[in-house]
Image (cartoon, rainbow, N blue to C red; front, side):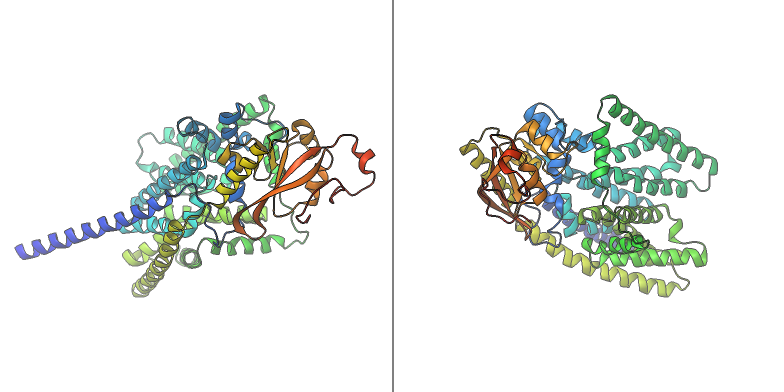
Length: 540
C-alpha cells in the first residue's frame, strides 16, 4: 500500500514537472512576441501584401498621434476613423503620455492584449475542461507564426479578440454569478466597447450570446432576462456614442468609414457563393493544417448533433467558437474583400474549437462525436497527432521570424524625414497613403492621399502640403488631383518591405502652380506627367 502511495506521488510530481516545463515553453514563445517591436512585419511571409503593415497602424491611431504631436486629434476633411472607432486611439492616447509617440509603444499595447487573450483563452477552455486542453489552446496561439505576425501590429484585431474572449468568459460563467442581471449590464457595455473597437464586432456578438443561452438553457426565464438586458444595454450604450457624434457634428466622418469599406459587388446573383468560398479558403492564410482540422471537427460535431441530437454543439464554448469564426467569415463574404489580418479573429476561435473537440474525443469518449468509443478515440488521437506536428512546424517558423528582424520601413521613414528636413520646401506636411504610419515613426505631419471626407483638390487647397510620397509608381487619379494645384519633382526613393508592388517609397516635392491651371495646361490630360513635372516612376 505504501509502495502504491509512493508511486502515485511520483507520478503526480512528474506530471507537475511536465506542466511546469510546458508553461515555461509557452512563456518563452510569448516573450518572442514582445521583442524587436520596431521591426518590420515579417518580410517574405505568406502575407506580404496585407495593407495593415504600411497603413493601419497610423490610420486607426492617428487621433492619438495627432493629439500628442500637433495638439489636435481631428483634421477636417482627412481620414478620422476615431469618430467611429475610438477605443484603440483612446488607449494609445493614454499610453503616449508615459511612453511618447512611437511604434514600439503602440505595438506593445497590442502585444499586451495578445497576452491577455492567452490568459483568457486558458481560463475559458479550462473552465469547461482539463488543464492540458487549456494549455493546448494557448500553445496553438502562441506558436502560430500568423498570430505572431499580426499580434505585433498596432491594429484593431488583437484588441477585438481579447474583448470577445472576455465577453465569452463572462457569458459561460453567468449561471454561477450571484448578480446575473448586473453582469448582463456589464456584458452589454462590453458589446458596445467591442463595436467601438471595430464595427465588425457586430458579427462576433452572437458568439457570447450563444454561450449565454447555452449556459442558461435549463433556466429559461433568467436566460431571456440576461439576453435582453445585455442586448438592450449594448444598444443604449452605442446609441449614446452615436448621439454624441451627431451633437459634435461628426456624423459625416462616422458615415465615411462605412463608405470606404463598401467594396463593389459582382452583378451575378451567385456572387455570395464565390465570395463565401474565397472567405473560407482564406482561412489557409492562418494555417494550412490547423484550420482544416478545426473545420473537420466542427463538421463532425454538427453531424453528430443532427443525427444524435446531442454532442459538442450543445457545449457553450464549442458552439460559441463556431459562431464567432463563422460570423467573421460571413462578414468577409458580405464585404467581398477578405484580407489576411481579418483571419486573426477566425484563427483564435478555430483553435479553441479544435482544442475542445480533441479534448472530448480523447478524454471524454462516452460523450464524443460518434457512436463507437474506440473509433472516437482513434480519431481523437489522430487529430491530436496532426495538431502536434503542425505545432512543431509553426514553432520553427515563429522562432525564425523572431530571430531575423529587419527594419526597412523604419529606416525608410527616418531617411525620408531627414531628406525633407534637409531640403525645406514650404509646408513640411507630407501627403501619402502611409503618411500616418510615417508620423508614428518620425513625427512628421501628414495627410492621407487616399481617404478623406472632402475631395482631394479641396483638401490640397486647404492644407497645401509640400511633399508627396507614393509606393513604387503614381496612380493616375492621384496625379490628376495633384495637378490641380502642383507640379511634381521626384527627388528621392527609399527601399522598404518585400511586396514587389510596394517595396520602394518614392518622394516628390510639390511645387505650387503660379497661376490658373486651365491657362497653363489647357486640355492636357492631368492624369499623365506634364511638362513641368520631373517624374521617373511609372504612372499606372
